[in-house]
Image 1 (cartoon, rainbow, N blue to C red):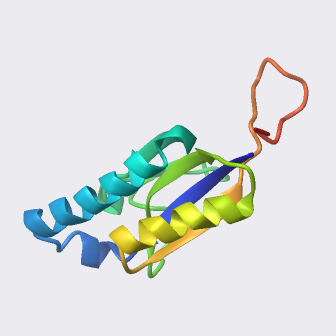
Image 2 (cartoon, helix red, strand yellow; image 1 turned 180 degrees about the vertical axis):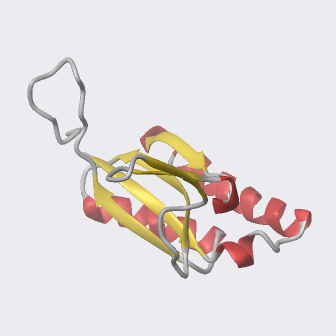
Length: 124
């Protein structure tokens, strides 16, 4: 089954990391990535919210910045193909060891493929 692991953290903290601190976190994450490589789909590290552009649907208005002000920002996500929620949580716990602070939200994914009539649950 497909799950997304959404990575949240206080952007003020992560953007303040030195190059060495960032490299150390990324090296730790690389070890987790290697361990779970066969389960990983796309892995995305988002640019800071200061680089975001938002389209407000009702007003058809484009504005700089993120949609909402929050304490923790979405910094990236993983798409994982695992047997069940417990396995997805195990990966999230491993990621936490490499990148402390913030939170990981684990959510099942429903694939939408325009050439199909019904969305699928991305079952393994």
